[in-house]
Length: 178
Ligand code: ATP
Ligand code: MG
Image (tube, rainbow, N blue to C red; front, side, top):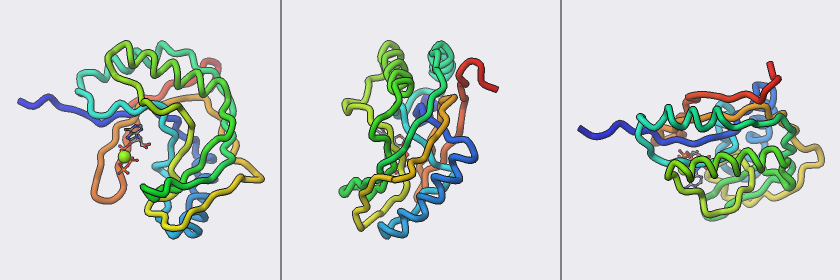
């Protein structure tokens, strides 16, 4: 019998208001870049990509995440850019807050201790705004998106022929938040 698996990642998941703001920006940038806007329900910042993992590993991942003390902060997303090769238009942070940087580092450190290797690339928080972009869009936002970060999530991704489908498995709130 094959072992049941899930494609997993830890992510920052936006609140409804932030999702609406970024969703609107995604539509603008998709139009400018001749790409396809990401569905606003799919907007996220990946903290750590775990790849395909046995379903049985989820309880360990949950307790690993629950042990992290994440502090609330504001993530200012102020840069739009494109990955030419993959046709992805993104929104990123030119100077991410220390709390997000340390949350990501802590996750990666704890994942490595369970045998899940870290991404070799340095962490640079960004999110996909549009796919199949054929015109490069690159600019600094005069009015950055200010995202109040007070939680992070474990997400399962089901890749489909169209957009991937994401399912929030669990979310951990910063202490003292409602
Ligand atoms: P699609 O693969 O259909 O374009 P997607 O990339 O959004 O969709 P996944 O491939 O499941 O969906 O990835 C989930 C998240 O993890 C995305 O934010 C993606 O950018 C990120 N990710 C995927 N693969 C890696 C990887 N090898 N290293 C780091 N992050 C990754
Ligand atoms: Mg992918």
